[in-house]
View 1 (tube, one colour):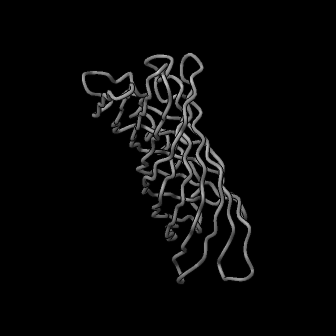
View 2 (tube, one colour):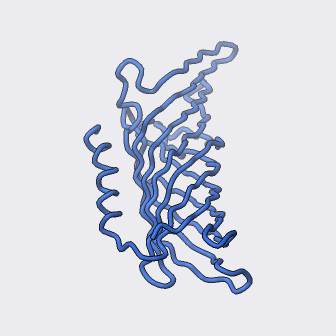
Length: 227
């Protein structure tokens, strides 16, 4: 799996170098908040309630124009994800909170619609895949039976338990936003993105094989031309 993790940034670098570098190619510094949760199919058809966590992301994105109103955005970000699950295992009340940190790579199509109200401004949309390489995972779990409670916390990888959480996460992004010129060269943007996780984030047993990530990101950025 470590070989796969090293392959990911190399693959995206090759895509970037093969893209057309035109006059309006831009480089953006982005940052924002992630409202992140997980869905799960627990064993024995028990019911689990998913709760969201608020975490953060920061990154860089290069946007290459493919036509007058279509761009291709190549991004890399430090993205915090995870979620909290509550449910019943028989008579035992179980709560599990998982915090995951990733290097996330995205390759997005970016259609744009210019706005006449502001100079050098546009509404833009996003669609495309993401592939994230996990760099950290912590958990906080508790179980309660009547008046007795057991709690545990720590790293998902402690004791060689790397199989508890998958090292890679594949997803698809959809969203939209607005970009406005704020100086002769710089643009500011605000985007709302939704990331749908496509694969389970673990595979240790029937419970861990279930959780998939769902992330709503409010992202702001500043872009400068590099071509």
